[in-house]
Image 1: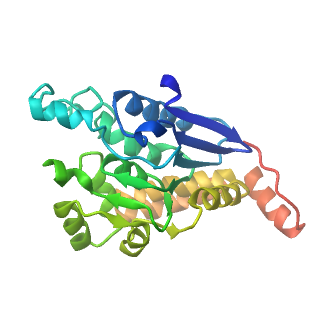
Image 2 (image 1 turned 60 degrees about the vertical axis):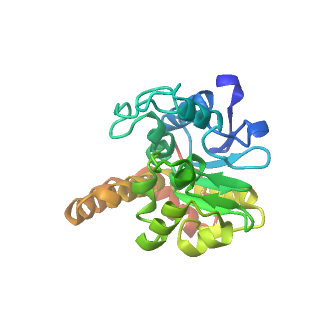
Length: 271
């Protein structure tokens, strides 16, 4: 996968996905965008997948856009409508998203829970990719920022639709207008982080294994409902609850969930 810029290892249904550009703190250049998108697209169809842990090698989760991109903007060598991925900002290449936006949104389309384990820094695009995960564990001393205002820009990797469901609007506005760096503890207080952990990656795998022990059909159904609930009408979401439950009740994996609990044994689910 693109110079191994992103590595994927799957064991017992849990995917260990790691950004692998540690010498650049996993900053986003075109090759890194390509690798992240390829990883997400693969996991959308991976058989037997139960959960995903997303993390970064080295000193950081992701430092955001590679600094070379800002130099290109300053000297005029990068056209104003050109994306950092090399495509067009205006082109809707992935449904409602352009290529850069889908680097964050793809994790919402992976059909199983995605847990981001965040350490070091998560700036700009890295912060927005983090927001694309279902659950976000961060170290207390992690440094995070909605960094784009520092460079005279706006968050444009799906930050706005992802942030609005997590934190108060006035907090989002203050952080967006100022590009202020905040800590993992503050991220939890604001609503961006699910938990603060001394070892977020270890805790993320612990949670992933717990999720992997549940009925995979129900977990995937839950994620579909959550996705619809973010934007759908109350009527549509209520209908989705009923439709998903009808499919689950009496299905082989749901019966196995009942029997394994009654018999006090580990469940064995079919994919």
